[in-house]
Amino acid sequence: MDLKMFFTLPVLFLLTVLDFVTAEVPRGCESSLESVYFNLCDLDAVWGIILEAIATVGIVITLILLVVLLCITPFILDKRKKAFVPVQWIFLFATLGIFGLTFAFIIKLDERTCPTRIFLWGVLFTICFSCLLAHVWRLLRLVRKGEGSSTCHMLSLVLVLTLVQVVIAIEYLVLATVQFNNSCFFDNKDFVMLLIYVMFLMALTFILSIFTFCGHYRKWKKHGAHIFVTMFFSIAIWVVWIVMVIRGNAELSKSAEWDDPTFSVALVANGWVFILFYVLPELRHITCPAKSEEEPPENVSSNQNSSGLKGLDNQVFFLEEPTRGMSMNLDENTPSPSYRSPSPMGHNMYSSPQDFTIPRPHTRPSYHPTPLLQDPYLNYRQTTF
Image (tube, rainbow, N blue to C red; front, top):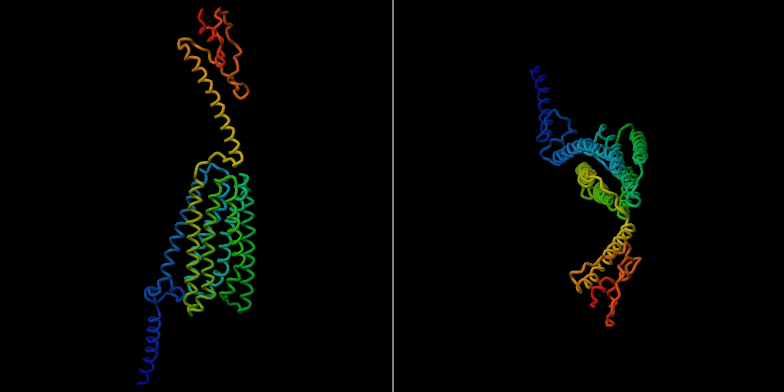
């Protein structure tokens, strides 16, 4: 009897533990799956599945755009547009990383996802906003002078701006690891403070994009409009998620449940803003055939004045015809040579011609030449003997 109880109690204990574990596994997930991955398959909390699907579509679209940009680069004829391609390549890779980072926030926070969240969020967004800032910086010269900085200068600017955030993120990781005894953990307010430099880049890029609308060369202003719209929606997204993770979720007593969904939604939304409002319009305009350089308004107005002078020249040129018509009405059968001055503005159209036939003398005293009839040959034919 004692032996039966000895074997029965452990079996009952194991069955109880298995039932407990099975009960904790959410619907749609396997029992062998670790608990940190439950948000990827939990059918009762579908936010993880929805964001996972949207992020996956974003990854596929970004990869397609990378291939498209690679294929169309040899066919870009305008060298000034072609100078943007390396920066846009880096931008697309950073956008691809943003969509991938969404999975680190769908998976629950642990020792593996914590460093990824802290380091990659700031670095990836710094790369994106640095690329946009370098683009804006070049556009500011293009809209005013028609010439911009070189590709090397743009890439150097992106590299320097990104290294600043890399140093900040590494320092924070080291300090946080020492503070929490070799365990990674971060507070929402500390996480927002870590991204102050990124927010500075956002504000600077947004302000400079406004000045791209001022300039003589209009065909570059549409590129500034793409960046302006992209930064406007990006700033709106950042304001919403920062307010939610700092105050909104805590006041609703949903901080533990809503923080990760809030971060994930912000990543996915900002990634799609980059694709829809910057990458796709830029690919559309970068493939347009190269056009002749537009002239500033001052040159255009001077050309219009010169063209108006040519029109006046033509009008003066044709003003000779009525006078010829008046002469021809007197004798339609008599041909009259046309006297046209090569420079009507320098000569009066009523001045006497340089070459004409000397008329023969006439006997009628009643002959009085008309002042408008300057052709002596016509005066002679109109005289009767």
